[in-house]
Length: 254
Image (cartoon, rainbow, N blue to C red):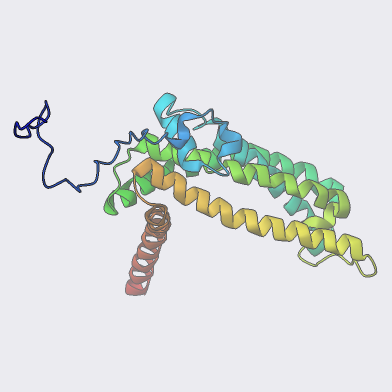
């Protein structure tokens, strides 16, 4: 029998007391977020759902894209509506022949509306550039003009909703008196749906305008809305001051 004292086994002694610390958590590597505008954009389509991405992409690639063609096209649409409206009103109020007035109304509308549309776009861009900077924006004239130009696209698309209305009502589509559709429930319901769609598109077009201004200035859409409101108030205030000054001058001489 071996009387030698017990010797510890080879190797380091066991750790005492044992460690109960939990192991370190595994390291996770998070991929950076992918910007939404990295994918292919079709401005005429994606302006409805991603207006900021569309404006941002255009400002990065070709800032002058659409700044002439879009207001001209919008003016052509508005000029066409002016001719149709003028012919309908002339027939309704004065009894003139619709076919006689329509060519003159269309000629006047198509001649002047595109030029006025371009003029209004540039003037509005100048004013929105100023008012946007009052609200913390940093966009220049070219950027704001690009955003405003592409905000016209929903209105151009919305003009297509007038085609079925014109096909159904003809010249009565632009008269102030509602057409007599008594007994035609289907036509009345169809016109009601068209009117609802036009109202929804109008509200969403306003939201797109605010987002386009916000992207051009680097501000929120709400500030973009106020920038546009202030830009519209400036000429109204100027006209009001001039009117008051003229009236004061005339009354002073009298």
